Image 1 (tube, rainbow, N blue to C red):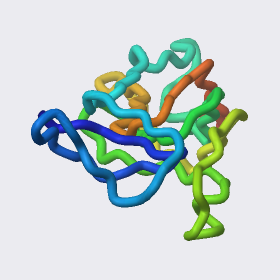
Image 2: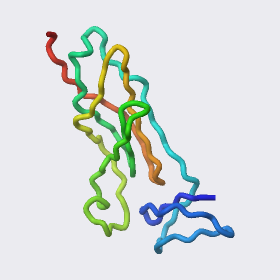
Image 3: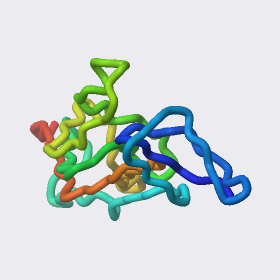
Image 4: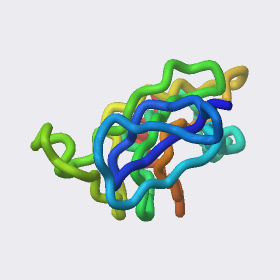
Length: 149
């Protein structure tokens, strides 16, 4: 049985239960252990007003309203390559940090490529396979509308 481990807010390598015990790599005062799983959130296809021509619109920013989230990857479409969201916290600036702060704010993803057309209606996909929370409160899109040609 393979278990996912979080020790003092730091992700530990998965461990196998041997004789009812596990051993972690470093000392920790608070350890959370559980079965590994992947959280997945995927929207319905994005709806853009059909009165305007689709080729006159472009998604410029994707806003994710996250609450106490520790880790998240995102992509456009079910089969897309997922990109890590790089939260600004102690783990990014200090490699010796003992824990990662949970992120609560609207995280803006600039330059998201979100093709749109009559045969292509994309979804937004978020995933987390880390033993940290992922709480999504809302998703918002900023559009740029070009004048008709």
